[in-house]
Image (cartoon, rainbow, N blue to C red; front, side):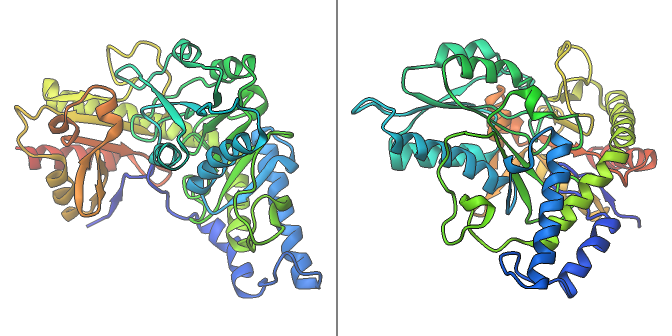
Amino acid sequence: MKEIYLDNAATTPLDPEVLEVMLPWLKGGYGNASSVHTLGRQAKVRIEDVRDIFADFIGARSSEIYFTSGGTEADNFAVKGITFAKLGSGMLTSGARPHIISSAIEHSAIIDTLEYLKLRFAVDVTYLKSDRFGKIDPKDAEKAIRPETILITIMHSNNELGVINDTLPFARIAHNHNIPFFTDAVQSLGKVTLDVKQMECDAASFSGHKIYGPKGIGALFLKKDTLIDKFMHGGKQERDRRGGTENTAAIAGFGKAIELLKSRMKSDIEQYSKLRAQFVKAIGETFGSNVIFNSPGCGSGSGDVPYLPNIVSMSFNPESVKTDADTLLIKLDMKKIAVSSGSACTSGSVQPSHVLKAIGYDDRSARSSLRVSFGRGNTAADIDTLVETLKDIIS
């Protein structure tokens, strides 16, 4: 039986061309980029070449790109680094508690970081609410600003719902109040055109394994002159802002993944869009009122809310469909079909998705949700198989 992988928002398979580029750096190109000998210089040149490639792809300067171990580190780097820099700058009045504005549908890498800052550094956090599709109103951000606000962070697109939030109005509101603006753009890379200059953001995070690159590599765009603390200590790498020996093989793979995006992104988006439309139509015809689409662009109700072409989140009516999402996942996996649910496994217990709860779902409804995300390797036949299998399981 053919394996069908439809969880590409979680991670994508490594492109064979990416692996081919990485292998020489894993086998023979083992030099430390900080070393002055030939092997070290070769690694340094490759790293800087990739920095140029990625900077060009997102409209940044090479000096504004910092390589990290992934999107989570990039998120931590931006949020903690900007916060600690503000705390240590003396810019806050004595006794004032620093304040950050974010949203309730952020990735856990942002939410958990903000909660840590609340607990350890008495930072106040305002979580903006969204509509039922995850759309956030910039006016709410402006209303939430205080004299002590030190950062606004709103994700560019949501990894569960696929909704895209135009971050430009948030950036302009932040800058009108002399506040830096950061956006988590991890899920957007490769699915929409990104230009950090046009977005007017001060920082943005990215990850390699969402674009058919390797795991363990990400990047932070940091606009020139943005006030930020050094994130990792112990070395002078990444212009003395992120210590640690660079992962040359992963960086080389990331660069190749970006190069492939340059030629394939248009066709990728067309393919994702066709598969998404086919899936939404087939699910609607098969399950009717027993399914609710959480993602915009799946029918009436979402208006003109923009969305990623590769993600569909849906919930089954728990009153009429008695099988919960976790059971569906197991039974689909037994049929060699991989999707994800609207729940997250934490310490052995299944917790309802904080994103689905933020858009108005109760625990029971949140636990009856599935997320399907399409990739380069998927076909129309995969969609037919998934829909028929869901029909059989639920019947």
